[in-house]
Length: 223
Image: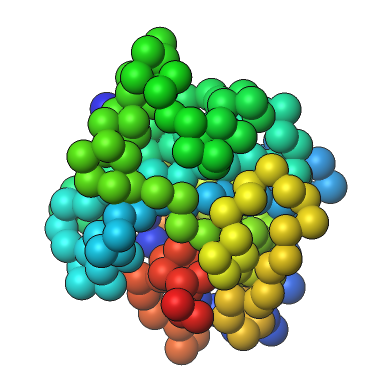
């Protein structure tokens, strides 16, 4: 399993046009982003004791979190994902889910998961059974992605972060959401073995420092 390096910068809205122009001059827009951006909806899981949230806030070295995700509110393509962090490096596993499976899970009908051909679905079932993992909240935002071949670099600009509060109705496009933060933009940089100097220079903004930021944690601020 390949581990990836990751930087996160919280930047001001006024930095967005500058970064967009810089990145567009050197990197390639992600071909999956029609029009340059797409909408992301995620439904995060956590335990009754908020283990995933607390481990993130406490900076636990080895941690994981489960989520269900779709793009552009297209529920015909949904994935279960597990993000893991170890020694500052991250990896992601995923498995496809059908809308019917998601609906069954949200309704508390999880028996089908035990016999799933997808190992990740079976793993979630075990942890829902033993640890009490349950859907916690919806996280919505807009992403502008860029890619760069050397280093397998991916740079994203995320904004308009919204929380569903306690809403877990992932399949409802009209689920009420509210802004989770001010107008901040999150710059993320991910790469494999090395980060080319040209990318390192492009993403530098005076007065901005690399800082941990969790969209899930930000969307739990009203709990």
